[in-house]
Structure formats: structure tokens, C-alpha cells
Image (cartoon, rainbow, N blue to C red; front, side):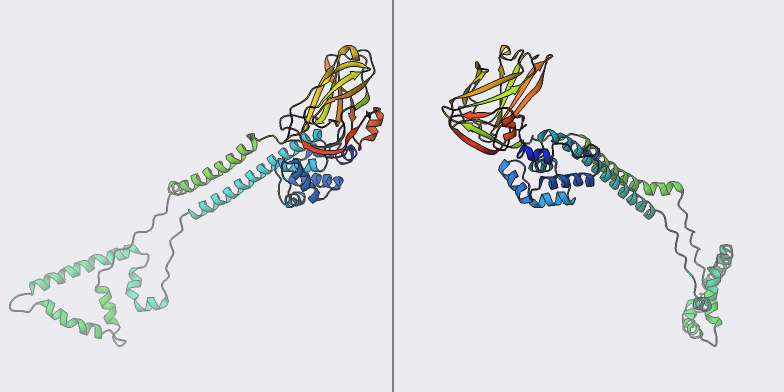
Length: 433
């Protein structure tokens, strides 16, 4: 087969077989370990990976991004990981297994994020529920100084509310009798009692001295006692639930929205633009008066043979005649010139009469026309056996695949115009190899 992202020798070393354990990867650290192993096998620098990605023209691979990915500091995008693996010479047919591993890791990460969001929401819920509980009223303690200064007030503010109520009735009655006598004595013969009361007030204050402590106490007893404060009612269980309900609803709504968003994002497939597939391969080309020759093996029971050639479609008007065992078998027709995606696979079905009952076919391609030359990088031979198409043989052309050329007796007659390596991309929707 052709070399994906460099020579076939490197492909067999770097990624011809899937890494052990790739099918069971579900954690980020497991994926990082396997990516690091591929990077070590490829024996390539981050600078070279970045340069290859730039030449391919697809997803870019900045060195800092690759370093963060290999260190596990950042979970990569799928396109970045695939470009990295192509730069590490991982074959194209192995990339789907890596993509599936990436998807499993992403789903696991989203599940963990949903669990963490749920735990944080539950913590907030508990905090809000605790804050909404009613607090007991603060108890005020009377200091000894206050007790000695106001003994009467202390007795009246004691928990015995019944005694306080009994003291209030005579006090109000006495006050009423005093007010009646005061009005009765207010006659022209006698001055009003209020005038005498006004004159007596300063002496009452001056009598409140250490030598006469009973004066202040008497004054206090004569005042009507203040009505007792109503005891605070403890909230019922239904009132507590009513207070908590807005907080509970808000937290539960936030939790449901976060969980739903994560689950929807993890399960709904995103529509993405297909990435172009970049391939690095070596090949050869010949010009006017030249031809190429090679031999492939097939099953004698075949009922048809298909020959497919990988070419650089950036060179236009390539045409060559095909013969099989000396008999005309078809023509490689010119293809439209491609500038962005220069790799193309062109197929020709050979006449069944030329392949039936044969074990080997000798194919010759003879130059007819081209804007520059006729190039060939890879030949695959498929055969129809039992009603289905199967791979029969493969020839990888190029100076880095001399063993494949020798096994198929490959050679060029006439002027050889190219022998080297090219790195192009297939169109996003097609191309094989």
C-alpha cells in the first residue's frame, strides 16, 4: 500500500497496527498516554509536525497546542488529534478507531462535568435551605446593676405575667380616683390642684437621694405598668416550607438546565465540515516516448479485474494507453486539473476476457499526451470473485518502495521525468488509498 504521511517502512513502524488498548480507552489520561506513544514511535519534532500541517493546508498544529495535548493540559479537538496522528504517520484506515476513542473520552468528560455541576448545585441548595431556617429570638439578660437600680421594674418584668396584670388594675383605679378629686377641688375658692402639683415636682426629684431611696421607688410604683409584649410565635412547618420553596425552585431549575445542556451537547451529533485527507507518497513519472511496465497476480476464478491508479491531478491532460499481456485493454483518460486537492484515484475496468483463467497480468502504460508528464504513485488491483469485489494485489511505486517495485517487476522505458515524494490532500468527500 502507499505510505500515508511518509514511506511505507515508517508506516509499518509507527502505526500499521492499532495501539494496544485503544478500543477500551474512556479516560483523558489514557488517550494522552497512547498519543504520546505514537509521537515517540514517529520520532519527529513538534516543529516538523507543524510544518507538515501547514503544507497540507488543513487543520493547523501549533507547537504549543501539541505540547499541551501531549502533557494532558488540554483536551484536543478531534480535528487537531487526527491531524497530529497523520503527522505521526498513522495510516488512514486506523484513524476511525482513534476517532471513536476520542468520542468515548469526550462523553466521559461531559458526564463528569454534569456530576460536578449537580454536586455544586446540591451544595448551594443545602446552603440556601440552611439560610432560610428561622433564627430563635435573642434573649436579653438583666445585669445586677440594673436589678439594684430598678427593683420595682425588675419585679414587673418577671415572667409572672399574671402578677403584672393584677398590679395594673389597682394602679389604674388609683389614678382615676386622684383625677376625680383633682377636678372636684378645682373651684374658685381653692386653687387648682395642678398648680400645686407643678410646684411639688422639683422637690420630688430632689428627694431622690441616697438618704431617701424610697422616693424613686415610690414614683416607679405610681406609674402605670406597660402592657407586656406578646410572645413571638414559632413558625409552623408549613411556613418554613413556604419560605424555602422559592430557593428550592431556583436551585432545581439551575441544576436541571445545566444537566440537560451537558447531556444534549454530548448526544446530539454536531454537523462538521469533513476534513481533507492529507497523504505523503512517493512516485515516478515519464514523458513522451516513455512507458511503464509491471506484473500483478490475480485469482484465475475472477470474472473481472479493476485497475486503480493514484496520480497527481495538478498536472492536466494526462493520457496513456493500457495493454494487458500485449493486448489493448483501455486508456487512462485525462482528468480535470485540481489545484487545491491534487490527489486523485482513477480506475479502469479491464476486459474480462483478458483476465479470465489467468494467475498474472502484465500491464504496460504508454504515454500519449500530458501538460507535463504521466505520473503514477500507487496501483491497486481488485478482482470480482463470487459476485463481489476483493483486493487482489498492490504495487507501490517510488524510490522509497524499491522492494514493491522489484516484487512486481516494475520499470520505466524511455525518459523518466520525476522520481520523488509529494504531499497533497484528497478532496474532503472522496479519495482512497
